[in-house]
Amino acid sequence: MSATVEARERLNALGHTAQLPWSLWGRQVAAVMRLELRKNFLSRRSLLLYLLAGTPIALIAMLNVFPPPANEFNDFSLLSVMYAAIYNGLILRTLLFFGCAWVFMNLFRGEVVDRSLHYYFMTPARREVLVVGKYLSGLVTTVVMFGVSTVGSMILLYFVRFYSQSARYFFDGPGLRQMLVYLGITTLACVGYGAVFLIIGLFFRNPVIPALVLYGWEWINFLLPPLLKKLSVIHYLHSLAPVPMSEGPFAVLAEPTPAWLSVPSLFVFTLAVLALASLYIRRMEISYAGE
Image (cartoon, rainbow, N blue to C red; front, side, top):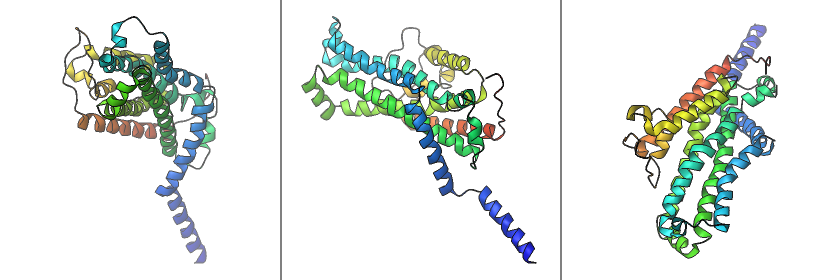
């Protein structure tokens, strides 16, 4: 009789272990995040990320030292349009895109190339925890790096040559709100692109080609019909821009998606992608052959 009771208690214990409490999940996610954050910020792979995030700051610093002869650069009233062009064309569409690609695709693909993913799979943690922990580490990394890039480049553009006017613009005008909106767009871009590139790194042995296809799709978004525009991350980000930019004479006009719909749409999309990644990684078998 006692043996039966003991066996039943063991089964109950196993059942409680299989159904991890939220507190244990949280501790495991935090542990994965800490380990991955050290890799993201301190490994040799992080050098490219620092280069991408630092490019806008270095570019604007050079423009302040060697200002171009164009009158637009010396007209304070045009700085908001100038920064919008720099942010949309350089930071958002190019540097942030490839920075997210570099960080999030390497979360799993980098482990496979380094032949180290099996160490994670040998730990007593559910694989969904691994997906969430790695994704959050990539999100923190990119938001910090490109958040500093976004804010730093804007401050350099405004305050170095127009300090008094910029102080009034930011503290008594719309400047601070615009900066916060740009920072929010950067964060949402990391959320959306991060989810896409995480799953590309999981599904494709050579993720470069899908990443380039996605880059092309995002760049030609202005040519797409309104329905297809909504099948891209950049459409929802552009809808939030504090200073709207013209997309050129060949652009297909479409109504921007309002913020109350754009922001939840990106989060719902991200949760769906993470759920798909969790289902995939449950059945994932490690094979380093050909890597």
